[in-house]
Length: 207
Image 1 (cartoon, one colour):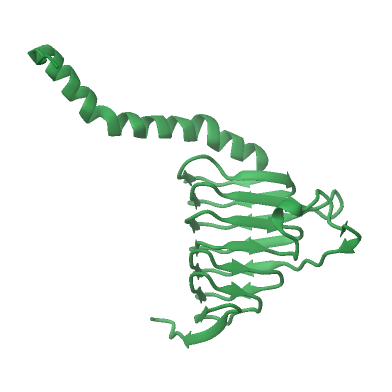
Image 2 (cartoon, one colour):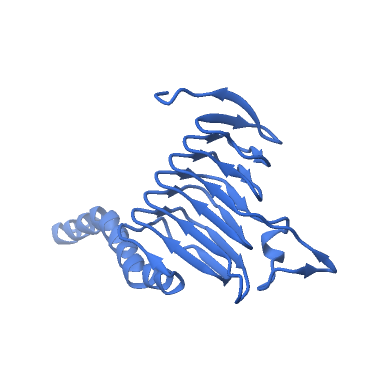
């Protein structure tokens, strides 16, 4: 390969060092010109400070989505909403929530996540695999599936690949270990882990 002349070498150097800047610029433009407007279209409310690692969450079905300020979504997130016109599915994400990993949130009735939470697991307020949810809750294959609201209060941490199931409330400051399956509500400032999740530690508020 022939040696580059000084002008070619300078141009190649500029292009090489500009790659991160160009990549960041492309991501910035994609978020603010494509992904954020598309997400805003699907939401009843969307606060300031949205951060996306990749595309906006995929949203299937219909329902009410409210997203507060300073929410960060990881890549490959998926929301499945399966309410009805008279009883809509409601997904409420409050302020300063960080999602990391690849989460699925399946909502037939209601899922609420409070302020300053870190969420790395899947959340389902019903007994049906999210991809089998229909636009209207009711019989699937002749069986009526159950659902109950999921509430995650402020300052909760949910580890990677954990699963939060229907009717569960995670009280303020609760911590859910990676891979845990939570079938019962968790008291404030309590660490749970395992399948099914069990209490392994009680935290003091300052821990």
